Image (cartoon, rainbow, N blue to C red; front, top):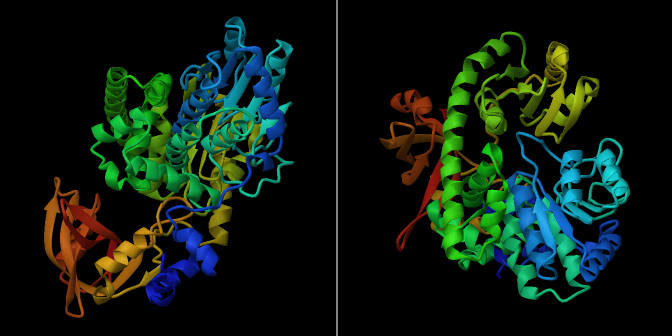
Length: 550
């Protein structure tokens, strides 16, 4: 690859500088379709012990149970280890707890069921690091446990073999792996000690990519390599039949599939089953090689996702007035949603966070307790905020952008008052905490846009957390040829500047900015440079994120 153009083109070199890409070797690695950055799986603490225990179980014919989670990361992790360990033994199965009846992580009832079914080794994926009591209970029944996880450990770590880059004693060079990334590392380590087809270890990278994107992990460092290879396999037509059929049913052109397609098309459909019922539906779809079964399972996932959208929209609309009332009390929105479906409350919290640009927690009744789920904005670490008040929680976990907990009903008002007081303090330190201003990577003028520049920018992908799409600011432009699309939610138009024009498209916010457009005044436009592909034609366009007065 000729990297000189990236060094000599001002727009590209500035964007690379902002991403911390310095030096030819680092630049080549960043842009390469075949990145080399990857770490030895045995750098993860306890990996040797985990592999030894698994091999002993496989060779002795012990029954192995993969214990997963009901979100996309957990489902892809479960499917990955089922495929890899299943290539070595038929005596492997999986268990995914019900989001609604059991909640996240290991629980004693599930362990009892595994014991009754003669399970002898549990391998957790995407959970288990803080399940000290549950792992000890499994041990007391004679069940050995390997924990693979990626979550922050705030309390007592589970006893025994814990493989987690965030574990206190772990020195693994990259802490940002998803649960499926850690599961893949276990599979890779296992493959170095027994006969697992290399093609299988490559094939499951599709699952690694989907799970990593689905859990919104940073697409930098080793994750960038893993996701790039996974997306490349998808573009070649998919190895996984379930993923391929989901892409087809979702209308995704997998020849040009991106991390954005995965995030908005594949991930929600895999997540939907766990949100509304049985997450094993997703696992079965990802494991099956039977075309008829794949069709049936993927069709069911599509139907479940449609139902999820309906429930989500209803709950969102019902929560708006409650959120408005909350804002009169303070800047932390805490809503009691007594009748909403528990499985969609996390998405609704995220939607409300976007609408109000405030941290949001939604609580609902659950077996005499309150179960809460929260989402936060940039600048407010929700995990740290809630952790200050851990005395109110029966159970609590998460990270800076999203958290979940259970609590006694009597503590709700105390928590609400405490969180609003915390936010007052944060606002005193940063008056612009709730400002919505879009931060552009750089200014650009319309004559400097081109299809060649857009193609070069595509090499910055995969985009996502940690590597966002470059945002450009076009100042003092004229908007022309405005045309509403799709019930006035979207719009297509052009912007003119210095005698040049470029096509634009705006999603979801067309009515919000139309009064500015109608003023015919010079405007400032913020957007992402895209390539619009249709049949054999390509043209550069701007996907507009916001418009403001110049």
